[in-house]
Image (tube, rainbow, N blue to C red; front, top):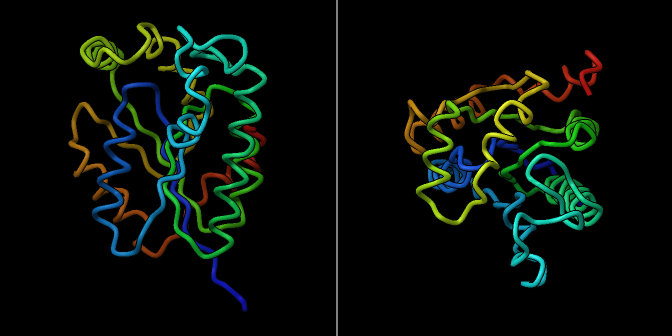
Length: 195
């Protein structure tokens, strides 16, 4: 049976930028179901002993680079997202693109699929305040990731969570996906050799 590919929405931003809240809001606002298959979901598949490590470590990685297990985990996540979409499922996924190789792999896997690349921005001072108040984040992650995750500079849409609520961000995502114009950020990244 021939199955039409599902849509892919990749939401990239620094720690504490509001990606998880946007994903939940996207799942509510979209008429079709979207699977949450992002980084947080894959991290929670790991044995608890890996999640209890302070600041992560060289196995999973640090805030601004991946360790060996982190590379394998994210590689598997990218391929799982592509497979789910090829099977007709819509996917929304959070990401923290600290490694150029991860962006390249996303571009290669998703460029020929119905995929949108969404940047989640937020001023550093707001990120650091959120990081501090949450109490479940390693202090300093946001600062290390703030510029790094957006270094490539190409998105189909960018939202600023210091100005918009998760619901408002999700509505912008919905409008961009449903406007009829396909996402092309991954294609542009490949053509411009940004990855």
